[in-house]
Image (cartoon, rainbow, N blue to C red; front, top):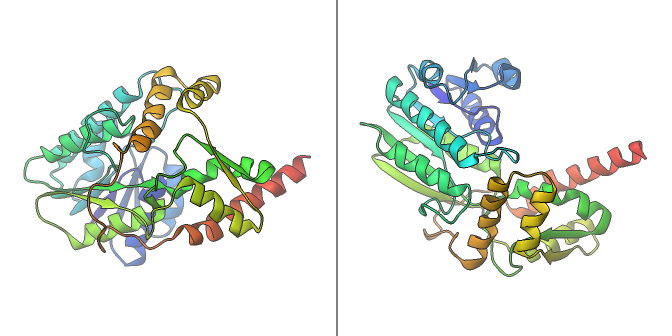
Length: 304
């Protein structure tokens, strides 16, 4: 039995679908049974449990041969203490894993999680990894994916209206792009294949691309130019606060581009076949971004 926690999220859902398609017994766990309903219809056993409830999570993990664990959600813009939320959730999940005795654990972490500080929310995943590595007798694999291509969807409106992408990343810094679906697929494959000891695996797609390069790729896909504008860190931080993001979350979020631009937040392992996922930026743009752009345009036209 494979147990997928956070199965209502993108990576957990992708992992569950991969395992179900291969005919494996799967138990999916999430905060909302409604969000797990379609997976249950596909044959998964669904359990509703909050990740901060160690007892409930231990019951949901009971009998698992291996489990995929992820802190959900990975961003709460209005939370008064997001680092505290991460620590509470990771402590409860780790306790649940210890109580249930799951022998193999695949954990969702992030690139840069080798650093204990200076990387925004990623530092919380460093602490999560540390807790998991101390589990008695467990084999733990922490997956450290790069920058999710789905983040580009946050710029769909500015691309649609102004043919512009604005972000705080330096235009010439390559980002290790990856899709959330590919992360889930990699997690499912790892659960089935197994490993020994406590390990870390960085994950990225077939090519690293700068934000300026992504803007050009979007323009090529649209058939007209899309420009990239770098937003200064101070302006980026002020914009988060103006949008109602809690001060602690705004500060943490601003640490991420600062760390990327300085080179502190980067991939440290050489590219390998095991650490390279298949979906290219071009495929993501064609299959995900452009349809989302078209849907938003249709929605705006109806509302207009």
